[in-house]
Image (tube, rainbow, N blue to C red; front, side):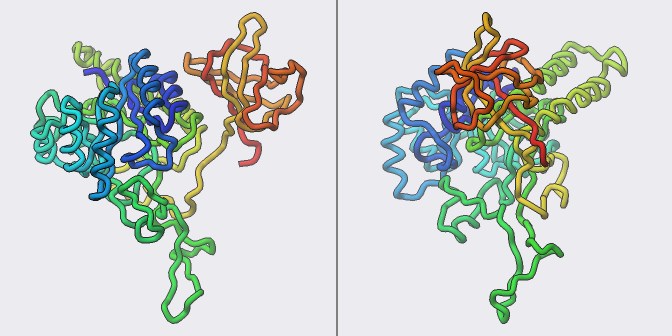
Length: 430
């Protein structure tokens, strides 16, 4: 079965970026009933337009319907499903049995994927959901690689396995958290998580109110609940060998720069993993150099370049999560919840004129003449250049700096670029 790269689409712009940079499928939410109420999400018209765009490029579209609804949510959910019945959604991500029942009643032919929020951690549970009509399960993040492989061996062939490979990790069990409810009144299981696990904490003794003691010897407090980010780009072949066919990136609320950076690298990783699997299926085991160990070693060597590129997008320190056993202290960052941001996204290419060698660029952060910039794009373009020529797109007058948000510029490029390419600049002070 072909491996699928599944990317987040927090709004219509992100959907198009995910498609341009090589996603095989995208997942997104409507304006309600999704676990990311803070994302831009999709109106009904945006949903129709976005799905039409994705389908025109051969990309599947999955709609998240994965909140844990209360009684008051049922009638609005039914009305929503009636409104979208004619929209060609490829599958629905559902976690709650009641929501699944409502979906079946209102869209009987809906393809159902079990959300990771359902906490599916064993093959008997997966078999149960298969009996309910579910044809893909998203593994709980607490499952190891060995457990996934064992489960694969006990499932029908037409039951697919989807797993997260990159993005933020939740300190709570598969995201089933009450901390946000308790501390802020925002229900994490209905899409409103305030992420209190990323906050600083200290101890207070009841007889000494106002006296704060750091949990560790650090005057700034301690981030005792702060997970590192998941990154499995070095291990895609092992995941595929274990039976995973859909590789999921977290991040519906992340920027288009983050999305493009991550999707582009995992596209390369999945293509390389497929070549390894095809070689094994064809019996290409002629010797150690071409055998499994040699193939994996070559893959991991190539993955170092992909990792370096991933590091240029905003991220926390990386971990492999639960895939190789229970995480230890290295899977948490007790010092800070801040992101590593060594590069700044400065521009999005809207078009390119081959005759003049100029790109039409929408400014996303200030840029100035003389700066060294990097360019990467959906067609594989990747190069560095000095920002030597820049004009205001409307007046055609030369400018030395572009400080205005979303200002349109004409920038001379040393190599051809395509629409959707990104411009970034390394930060001088880290």
